[in-house]
Length: 366
Image (cartoon, rainbow, N blue to C red; front, side, top):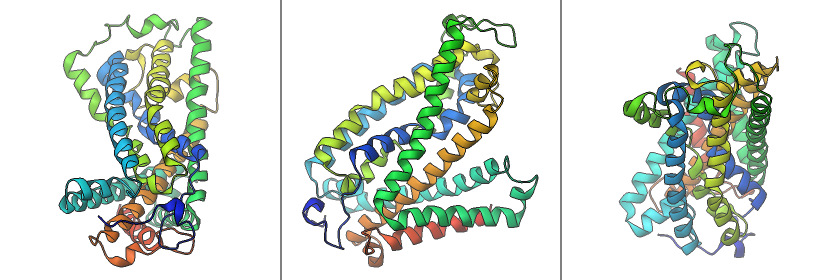
């Protein structure tokens, strides 16, 4: 692989990525990456498929991702010349592996970005006049506006990207902590759900046990639950732009198990304690249902904002990571050399434009 000076020693160089992401940014980005939109909107479907065993599913997937990220972090720290995991693959496995991983990862995030545009259009329909968001001209305007907004954020400076992601992640964290707090209060105060059931921790295992749908339901839950973790690997694309990586990267990786237990397992445990799993609608967010049961009339508005910010965060992170992939590929001679050029603000501007062009084109043909 191409060897370059450490970014700490070359901050003034316009040819190197700069370490502008602080520990505060990295920790919240890591949390935000571990909390996907699927937790807010897709967990109702996973609960209907797997029942209470969804708690075990998230613990198993979380454990797998922890070991994956632990290995990734140790390899990144073994050689600080590595900009991301494609550099590792190129150096340790071979140029072919680096090429395949880099371009497939780029394509994957471009497709996710296109899907995010469709989701944004759908969620904005909650706020816009009826039908406006679903006309061809309305979809085109929303797509262009969203892509240009994300492009502008990433063009200015990596520190701005970190700051925006910090607040996006904070919104998700506050929503989950709010659900845990309100749900716990409802359980300890013996809340009666509209269906007549009493809120109790025993609701989790009293309606068919932990595996009410059998082994097939347990296995089916993995398919949807796994998608909620897309983005946890973003730490691996930020190695070259993280301050004091020897200290901050291990912190972010080692906290993954705690985050999985708190944000996934505990939140869904509370949801199924308030409302038995077999009474949770598969096509509705259980977060909205719980807030509505608590008498919070603005629950739909609150969750729409949370999910909208989550989707915008996904697109923002995707554009960031694809531009760094293209930068690394170009430095290895596996992409056009113009994509290896950095702007005066030390961001791969041409890579950003390249990725955003494909996302916008894909969004325009939906």
